[in-house]
Length: 229
Ligand code: 5RP
Image (tube, rainbow, N blue to C red; front, side, top):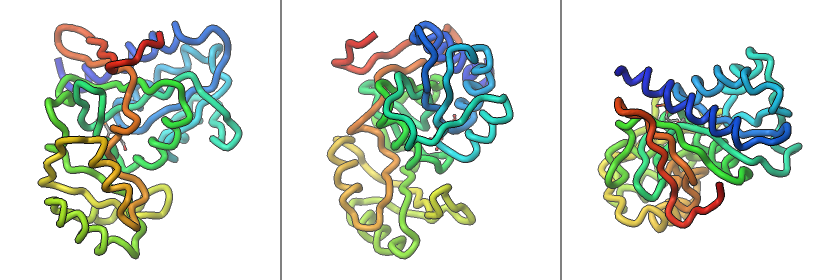
């Protein structure tokens, strides 16, 4: 099976899950990336159950609109039952590295308003420990070099994502060489560096459920201590 087919399977599993979750029309949060795109492309099937979607990027908002799905401003939404998005890496605690597509800040914000984060990935994204994928960090442009020096002190080699500007007008540093042993405290440490807008670690608030597509089918992983259906 190709990686594209696996992404499709993970997205289909999330569509089924969202369908079973929603008893009445609701607003849902929608992520960004090639796996999230497949989820978006399947959402018209659930149109009757959707009051609208909050998108985590301009790119996803445009895709939702092309399908005729209402895109809502997060400021007009108090809560959402679910946020669905991909990841670059995910571990057994359902902590993730995200931001390969550069949408990490809006992803973290939209996810924080949702009751549960459902992560959709192909099996290649599942890792024993996070950090082989360069950690994306969104920074205020004037702080780029200062943040890079602080990351070097933590053992990381930060490279500017050339020619890329986030939806929020900021820049991304991709950081290699980090040894992330305690993802939650590492996320806190990075959050505390002045000039960091968002760290691509999603560990303080990870996913509650992951749909992991493999050639043997889709495995559902549940976060430890999460007992909501
Ligand atoms: C975008 C993200 C994506 O979820 C992540 O990069 C995975 O993307 P893909 O589904 O294309 O592999 O965090 O900012």
